[in-house]
Length: 476
Image 1 (cartoon, helix red, strand yellow):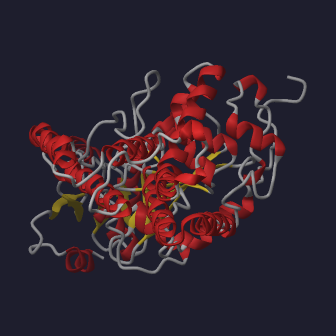
Image 2: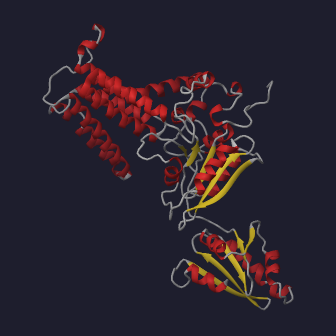
Image 3: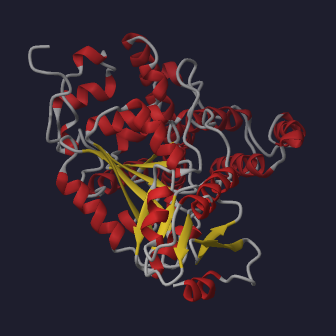
């Protein structure tokens, strides 16, 4: 195994792979490692303990058993396969191989480079925990288990990618999660055949749900450990992918993408009010611009009390072109904001205000109403909790705008109906996307719009088919 390990590990060619040789009880012992992924202090302590065997033990043919017994570490395993030993070394563990031994002893001394848990930028709350998932899968599972101290919480590890061999953990609560759902997720993961997943969770998503060119998100992402724990308790399955700070929640419906932790950090009445405002923002981001364009093209649709709605002056550029230009301009600004270094973000904001503000109106490129309604729709887009859903709604809005521009009222009605039918036909891992509207579930539908107090939420969501349906014992 020594010679094969040296060949497979690329010793002498890759500067970050190494081997340390010792003579212990008359036999050569090799320690294989990868620099940068191991904790050097742990390795030194272990090797010090092993070298002391020469002074404390007699020579023996069972050097391997003696070494295993003297490895003062809580995570030591014995593997007899070269591929297993190689995978573990490349994952940051060390392999200890004694001369003429057919087995290697794997010790977990991983110390991955990475950042400390901090609050995610996209899921901020006024009150609540400030720790979030990071790129280390071990830290992420620990953050989750810290919140659910249940012996039935399971994290089943597997590897994906024939070359990357990325660690992927399936998280669920045994006795709560639907076994068929867990089996389905495992089956989809095992069927992934690709050389590597450098894009981590996004690549896993595309293999599991087979989204294709569907713009609407079929799985939900979160970087908050408390949100992940809540969904585990509801009966969902979580996927943790190493090198990614996002955790995949399965299954997820349309209304899962409209939830936010802030609603549950406030009183139920305040949380309900925030939820209604957020729903209003989502509807505005989708329908406000098409409806305004419709009444601007056909003012007779408005009652007398609302006749003031519409452009107050004529321009040479059609309204639909103005709206599309302004909408695309806002998208340009969003992309530029992502790529702009922080010290230059203020300057970029000033440029945006000049280009799409008053000067664009003064030169006759836009009418003031276009800027107003574009701004309101953009605020609704940013008020959408799910970034993926907000982008999908923007694409749907463009479809509605084009339909209104071409066919006016019939175009708006037909395009809206087609979008609703399209969403109704979607399924996320055999889960209806528009649940609890289709199929209709009265109690769950009520909870979508009204944030119930935790003591009143006694049942888990039926859509995940939990084994234990009650969150609280009967009579409590």
